[in-house]
Length: 135
Image (cartoon, rainbow, N blue to C red; front, side, top):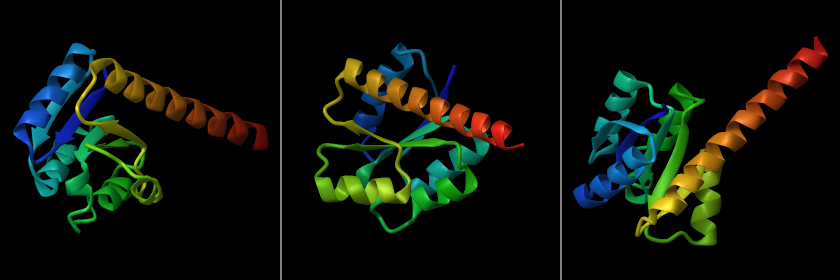
């Protein structure tokens, strides 16, 4: 079972996303309202992925860069009510793996997480195969 941490200042959004992910078979091992507390939860739980609200990403705390540096294999999903092209590019450049759009549609959220996880596994498998081929 894949573990996740939720970071969103909205308790309602955290609760809804928690329900969607838990019902989808994921282990929501922690949730909080600030990026600083979110980083502490990452240290404690070492989740496979993190769902973090856009305002937490853009609050100046460099939380995405910190997660990327300390947990390079952890997937990061940015949660937002809407994402424009410029924000999408900036988030990808920071290291965001995928996007979850509010209001949450359970099937869409679960498909987004599943497809991103599968793509990352395939990428890692291809890198491992290439590394074996070079040795």
